[in-house]
Length: 446
Image (tube, rainbow, N blue to C red; front, side):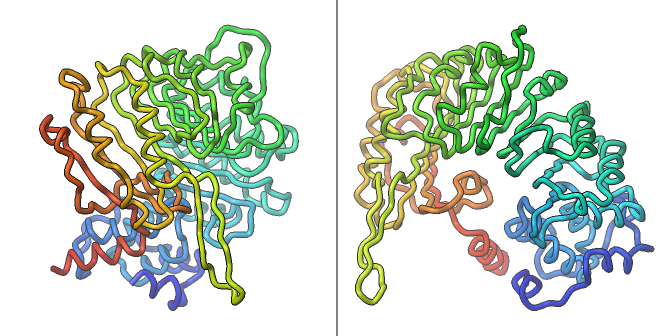
């Protein structure tokens, strides 16, 4: 059904849609109960739509659904406005300041739903039409805003439009704000000093200069519970760990390292040794890390990215050979090498291991019993109650793959040692959203 709307149906424009329905109720209380007239139950239908419409939202498809199925309007409105993605880039699926200004003049209550706001791009002057009105309304009405994401190659604070800069400062001061995400976006690090309730900091793909600047000497005042570093190498970590940095990681509870070849993260591990509860880590061959210092760790996710890939083509252009490194058996050994640095007497309750084969049949040569025997020593790993093994094909975004609704359970391999301990062993493989949606539709019909 969604493919029909996405590819074949000519829907109203976004603004025309809201103009057509301007006299219809739009708040949750006004919408009220509606007679359900679709073949799938509401929870399944909403989940199917979710598999196609994660962040960023596919606005045209969602609006086409709301236009054709009034019963879906409450869900569609919530999807559109819960996670606002405003972009200065030429992408049809993202909202613009101009469009939002027109909508919220008629329906200001839609901003009550906003929980996440992403501002992407440098925003040329003409793209800022309506920005002051929209951002002031978001500041005034979005009392549930918990996440602010700033993205797209901003190398200096001064190059941002003055009006936009002013509103970013106001948004950063929102009392409910818990997460700040910077994707190739530079801001003066001292701005984060004004966020006493900041819970999570995400830094993704530093621009040419460090995204976080070093400030004057001061006591470390900015405490975060969760730190995610994405596509960051060791040299770029210096501004975060610098002795003049205002960050205090002594109370860090969650530490995630994704996609970056960071050879030395030991300093953050050591600083947070007494508080860290969850670790998500991409491991690599040259990485030197000791997890024995983590006395409170409860959940650990270890994954291995393919470092090199090559193809050999025949005279007719067809691929005749593909090679990549490390192969799944070597990936498993890297994971076991990292696990071996944990103290055998620990508080770890759950382990997730992510293997990335280029072809699923490459998993056949993995020595899974070597993983099982890792836990055979009596009296060790007493807190462990669940081990999940997840396969994600090369080229898939691992962040997306770790989302529960994108995983499909597969036939498990016997793990006698873990079974004897009573540990739950889950075997899952990542499936593409459209395949998962089709599977859910089929299951619902059975």
